[in-house]
Picture 1 (spheres, rainbow, N blue to C red):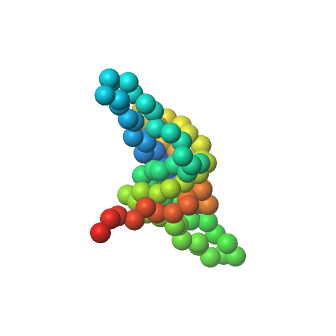
Picture 2: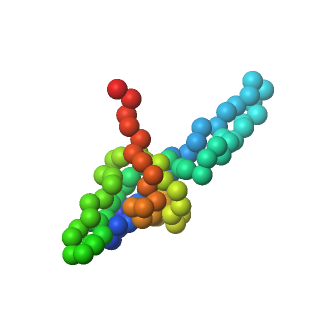
Picture 3: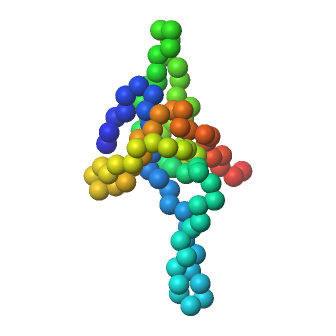
Length: 95
């Protein structure tokens, strides 16, 4: 697994659900927003600003909403590498 540097994050994209009609036709998920959902696989140590380490907004195992990033394949799996600024928010678990 890739160990990101600085304020980079490695995500596994979570695919949106497909719908199947009664006759078996598969309808792909509509893109209702520019945001994607992903599982955090690895997190860099953070960026330095004025000599201080800025903490990362998420942790390994978090599900996040993000935009942008670079899509690549590692060990046969599709992953997204992005900066901490690409993370819009952490998806909270239902209580």
